[in-house]
Length: 626
Ligand SMILES: Nc1ncnc2c1ncn2[C@@H]1O[C@H](COP(=O)(O)OP(=O)(O)OP(=O)(O)O)[C@@H](O)[C@H]1O
Image (tube, rainbow, N blue to C red; front, side, top):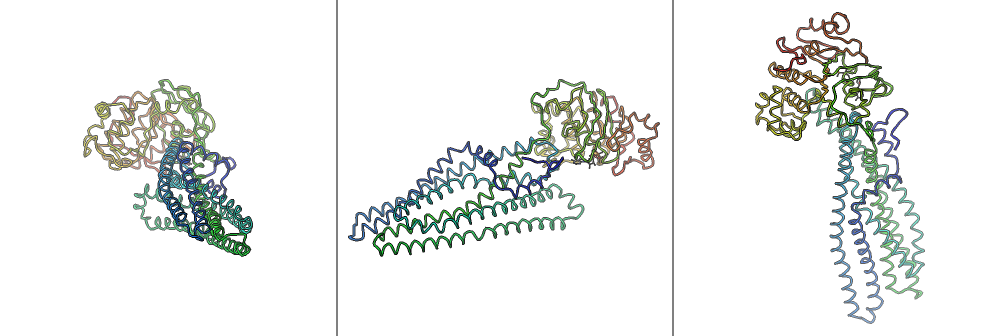
């Protein structure tokens, strides 16, 4: 699937709009069929049951015709009783097989939907960070959840029903023809009109269901965003506007839904009209034949049933196509997701990194999230093993982007990122992530206890080992004071813990992972002095013996780092230790001076750098924590 527009990837929205207008293609059928493979036994059973049911349906007019022609004049009680028993048997079969068919179809649906859900989940997880940066979470959720549900009728219920309808159509035609071909010729007037109407209906409804699915994913995306950002919304008092926007999206959804239903509403009455016309034609032609003596009353009665059995499937096709259309629109969206290739791919023969010494070399790198807007420009920077490098610079000038490139969440456009001389594009992601530890500002924790969160970094570790690590890092005292100590539930994304507590858990987690290289985006938010000191001590202990790249916001970190790199507009403009850079009287010296004038804060445009209490030891001074 071509997902490029010119030199840039199509946005998710553009892709979906493109797809909403696209009919089900052969490529998609090829993708759908393998999904059915594991449940083929159950589907075959459902189809077999439908076939038996069709035969039972056709036995009824046959029995009724038999009674009319052979058992009424003269009255044959035995034949009537036999026909009644036969009719009762067909209905008994209908009830028994109906339940069985539901059971098999339900089992197939459960298995199939489970398999598709797992596949979508595994795929989503394998996608590159860039995809999540570009795509709203709600859209992904809508595809992985609701769209998968909509697939079920199309894949499980529709095929046997379709087969049953086709079979009834064909059998009825054959039997009508056998009774009197002229009756079938009469119906031939109706069929082309019905077929044309069905094709038009299918085209219309597929397009409208694509739009309905797309609009549904928009309001789901908004709901997810609201849940994630509820604090901000409350804080800035945007509830009313936010609700207004949700209502707007809901209105769009309802409009497309109503338009979809309205555009397909003509089909049922239209086919009803054609059925009535077919029955009337049969009565007129059949009545004439009875008068001529070429047709019996039993034959005409049977024929009326067959006309109905011939035309009813044509009406069912409407409903089937509608379900098929909404299912295929959702299938398009699911395959769009499954077809999305991870932008970052591991080479088949990727190198397992040996234990590194810790040298980082950004070798003449260039990068932009969008090719037309470079963020990093020909940047060359070496960090020696064991060195602590602080990166400072104005907001939006590329500091965090360097972290994204070092951890290979994005690949450089030009140049290379080397670790001990190994290009990170040639090494396995697992071995890279094992040796490059990252502690970001958002300090994400997962639902579960504090201890379970620590164990994520070292799955085999005992409770005692985990607590010992917290102790070594100086976090134990604070984590012990949590309501249930280490067994405290941290809540969704760690929201039951304070900012400082979350940060400490993250630092202990990084310590347990024991990476050779540590990347740290220092938190900017304020915590109390005592927690602050503990965090600083933990940082100091964590940096010890490792190469550390720190996006530094605290003055102490910056001042006592081995070197400071000042980044401006995606390039390193100053590099040296605190004393050297002050002497140079460049950007860094200006920042430092602003700090002096600003009391306890060091500011870069748009962002505050906190200055810690004077007696707090520097986190990255070379001495380990005492
Ligand atoms: N995922 C993304 N997609 C597109 N552009 C991005 C993305 N992330 C960052 N950018 C842009 O890249 C530029 C550099 O961003 P970056 O986050 O590296 O800046 P920074 O120096 O770390 O800023 P801050 O100090 O505010 O964190 C900015 O113009 C930003 O808008």
